[in-house]
Image (cartoon, rainbow, N blue to C red; front, top):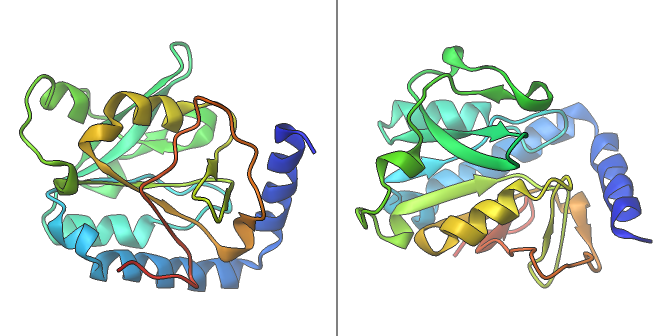
Length: 194
């Protein structure tokens, strides 16, 4: 199968998971994130607003805000094929953006805020990211737009990236191209973070 066929197959598998299972697995995964040292050390959290059958992040994002950690969610600029993260004070302020995904309304991104300044160490910025599939070698397959890969190519050295996914999304092998960037860690409902 080529990359598009693998992606379609992986999405079909994820979409077939019953909603109750996705909700339960999502809660397990995101609770493990909250208990992890990665989260404990983080001074800034870059997360995402879950969409369709992705690992649900609403509860997690609310908990990050409740704990007083700065939370940033992505906005996608499809015209320029880039993504930046913007601050969120309350999840009610999110509005539909690219592909109908909820996005922040703020205008100053984390990239602008910290541009040119080494204010944070790598372990102090935790990025939680979605994906379509992954494999045992740590490769991740996204939706095909390359937004996370481009972001990690530019900013990956300054953050710790964590792919959250369901175990059903694990493949024997994910087709990889030279510009694909592996996340620092992968977490499912059946794995743990040390």
